[in-house]
Amino acid sequence: MEFDPKHLINLRELWVRITRKAKKFTLDSIGRLRSLQALDLSFHIVDSGSFPTLQPLSDCKYLFQLRLDVEGCWKLPIEVHQFLQNLKYPFINAKYLIEDPMPLLEKLPNLTFLDLSAYCGTKLACSSGGFPRLEIL
Image (cartoon, rainbow, N blue to C red):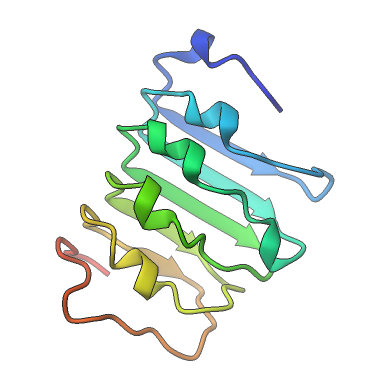
């Protein structure tokens, strides 16, 4: 649902639940919430190509917590480290995550705490220079 963010200028936390009936979902309206600090996204993905781009969130300069609770087979968006530079606390419920998310997550410069729940993959690989500020995994 589109909304006018000028009426929500002080919103700090937002939970979004997308049902299977939703045809197309973008983060455009959410990206205009300049004071947003925590975002919880929960939705169903039919195929791996239907995850929305995170680019609109690059304008949320105070966004430090992101929870992704996704039902269905999916890949972490490859641009996660480009647009979420201030992210410190991602929570990823990745039951059907189809590839190792570590090569992308380790590039987040301010990541302090990583909660990766229900990952059913066969490997998790981190490079020696990755996760420069990670304290808790």
